Length: 217
Image 1 (cartoon, rainbow, N blue to C red):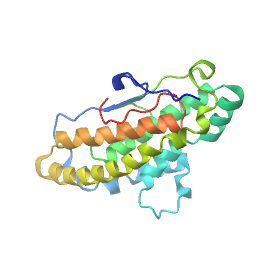
Image 2: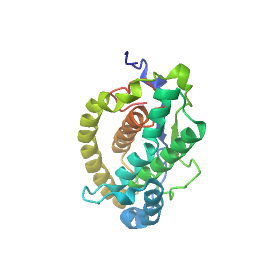
Image 3: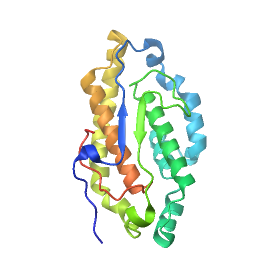
Image 4: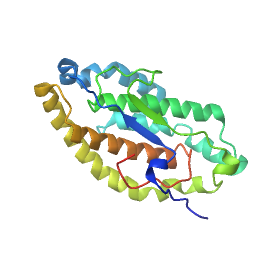
């Protein structure tokens, strides 16, 4: 079994970006972001059954995104392995839920101050192509993708800690200056991009190309 590797990272099939806000961000909603975000967190938690989480890990929003992106992981895995099919409606649901989750995560990371829409793209862009399962996907690879992605999990765990520190620094910066420091913004965006690609590879199973080890597009 061969593991497909990506060439030029800019050609990787999973693309993610956030428009940098070229204006003052809302200081009031930034100051109380965790409170303001409660309604949309309830929505995404309901959609992804994140409420089943016992809450002990303190990162329910991330759990909601991961669970949401992989909500059809086992059915999709079984269909690819046994039927070499990826139902279009499952793909569309996963894509739209991934986009919704990305908007919520971007809002929590203070990168934008528009309240996350459940259907409009806004300033958060996520896309990956619909795969032809019989042509584009190795039918056996989904059985081991989650394992092959372990190096990414380890690196992302470390990067996520740094990203959280960066968001805290950005919180203070926005309250004082109204602007998100561009360097921190690019770093947090890169961590989210990396995480999104790993999730798309290992759990939504939309590509066999191994995710690149980098933050850039």
